[in-house]
Length: 234
Image (cartoon, rainbow, N blue to C red):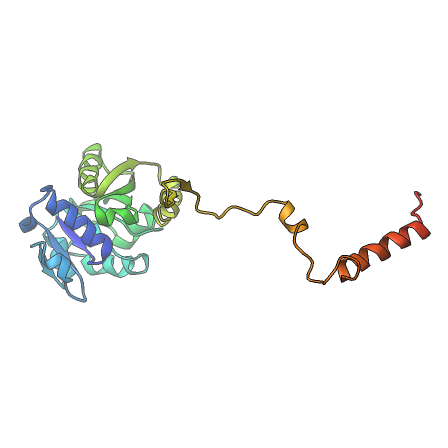
């Protein structure tokens, strides 16, 4: 298996796979042009700066890169990626058709088998919820395999690709924590309570007395004007 990318999501995927024994570290390749990161090296997987080397040795290749990097990452594996390799993309917002175009035509006329996965942030601690959709040439066996891989970092739900954009928004929405608890164990809400409606009316006037304060004077003047010139209905 191969992973192109060495960021947070790549690290989370590899950590889950290796720590849970889904794959052996000796059978995993990971590449990053900037060099391997320490958390990935500590997992014991094989690392390189050459994406083509990873593609050449992978039966399942995961592109765990930012969307703006995916095109160049696909270019870097052309000629090395086997037509039989199952391609998995976790690049947000890039459709399966776009990924297929970036990879170009595979040798032998066999179309690429592509699966798109959208994991969310809690996947970094093994509590993720991933949405997954299958390309037109992916098989039920491919679906089962990729589901098993991503279950190492949480749950997996198969959805239509049209729903992936909604999954993308949810993936970057932080979970809302439970209500806070007060000093006596009472539950308090996240939003402070609003003051009662009467609080504004009962606010004390800063003037020294009710007959000489500005607020009272304005009220008395308004009342006198109304008595002198009562409003007429049309």
